[in-house]
Length: 126
Image (cartoon, rainbow, N blue to C red):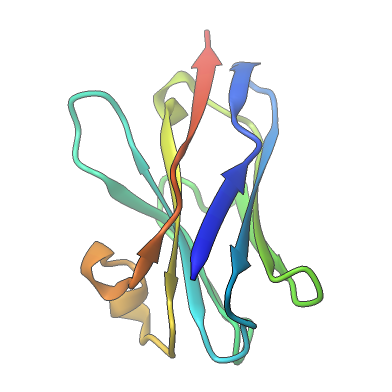
C-alpha cells in the first residue's frame, strides 16, 4: 500500500487549501484514514480522520469548523479542505491509513496507523 499526498503550498492567512491523499495497492472499504501535521520543533499531531465503513469523521478542537475531511470511494482518495487558515496551521501534513476500523480514541493516535504518506508542506503567511 502506498499513500501519495498532494496540495500543499503557500497561502495567506484567511485563505484555503485542499489536500488530497490517494491510496494505491488497496481498495478502501473498511479502513480508516487520518491527517496529521507536524510544525517545526513540535510533535506530530492529529488533525482529522474518517472511517470508510460508516463515514464518521473526527477532528481536533483546533481545526473543527475550519477543516473538513471527505472521501471519494471511486478514487480511493481522502481530502482535507482547510479554510480560514492561520499562521499556526503551518506544518507538514501527513496522511495515514489503517487497514481496518478504529474507535474514536484510536483514530487520533499515530500508532494506530499502518501506512503513511510522504507529507506535504502547508505554509500560512500572516
